[in-house]
Image 1 (cartoon, rainbow, N blue to C red):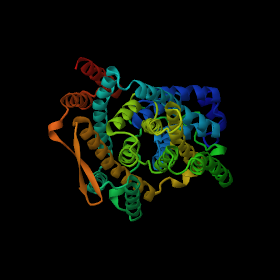
Image 2: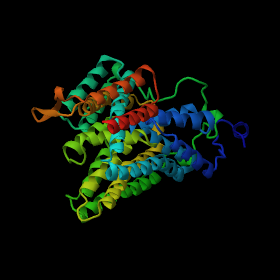
Image 3: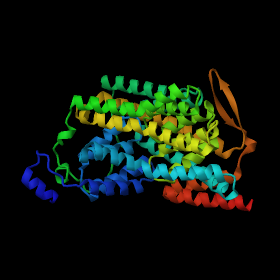
Image 4: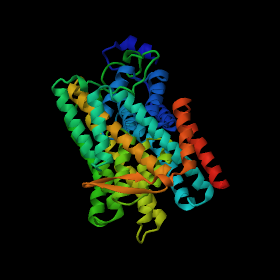
Amino acid sequence: MSVTAVHATTGPAAVPDHGITFNEAVRVWARVAALSFGGPAGQIAVMHRILVDEKRWIGEERFLHALNYCMLLPGPEAQQLAAYIGWLLHKTKGGLVAGALFVLPGFLAILALSYIYVLLGHVPLVEGLFFGLKAAVLAVVLQAVVRVGSRALKNNALRAIAAAAFVAIFFLNAPFPLIVLLAGLGGYIGGRAGAAAFKGGAGGHGPAGGEVVHDRETALGEGLPDHARPNLSWSLRISALFLVLWLAPVGLLLAFAGPDSVFTHIATFFSQMAVVTFGGAYAVLGYVAQEAVGTYHWVSPGEMLDGLGLAETTPGPLIMVTQFVGFLAAYRHAGVMDSLVAATLGAVLTTWVTFMPCFLWIFAGGPFIERMRGKRAISAALTAITAAVVGVILNLALWFAIHTLFRSVHEVQVGGGGFSVPVLTSINLPALALATGAAVAVFRFKVGMIRVLFACAVLGAAYVLMA
């Protein structure tokens, strides 16, 4: 049945039988997952092109409303958006399939590359590939600073929040969750007071240009599906289920492996991260780097860059870099267990506790999001958090630059915190040349991210092999 026929017989206020089979939806979600490169902006654009423009399963208004909700949540908004739309179309099983497929290709790809990394990482060819990737990743993160900053910092108040966040995390090592909390609280208070500085929304991620596809012209239509109506009993049951699925492994590890086990540390740290990852992957990577490098000593700064390079060149959310961190953490602290078995379990555990909460937020909160529409204070809190995220991403870019372009750094202590200062005489000229070339390609010639990463990896390999 065509979309036009549906609306001719049911009228715009009714909920049509959209006629989208579950098997067809699975094929489309698999296609979306295979094309989900380039971070949240690119992934959301792919979903919009396929689901709104091409398939016309969902309209512009509903798509942007779902995106606004996902941006209010901790976690990767593109993956949550996929789960949300999948849930709208085919209830809980649709959300599970859409959200899981969005993660699965990247999980398998990074797992395979992680094996190569620990088994062949000292082979000159592999070392060269990662040397080039680090330089390219620096340019990609700088691009994220500019992209997010250009849409988020619309006035001096928001610029001040971004500057304060940068100072707090770079110079004082302030915890990322505290920065998010304070920024959100300030924005919420400002929004309640009617401050014009905090007026904003999801801008920057939404599609622009082209023909607008209205909800009434799509398979889902304008009406609200029965399963998407608020139902407190169902929300409590689904919340309890996903809380158990998420936290039961954490509790079991605490009880049987003990608080000092690397698996317990992985489960508790990444569970905590899952509830504070506002602002996308680049923002939370500063927090992960701060803890994984400085507190737990799971990885080195260079390895964090390698992990981000893997996440950038594989499909799926960029936050999949955490899987690489969990893999290396368990590999190096396997105890009596085989290192590769421990590493695989570490990767699976990290992915589980990172993404299980995403389904909890979507299934428990989805039916109630209509009550959030037009809430000025919530929008203002998001606007302030986004501004703080710019400062956090800038910290990440500077941190990466120091550890990519210089061979030696020393730490300067400031009160209870401190920051890294490069030894200027230790500058890595080949890395500087590659990073500069990548930046010129990205900013001046608008070359796509995948091509820049590939070119830098090839040049890096060539340099190491000839050196």
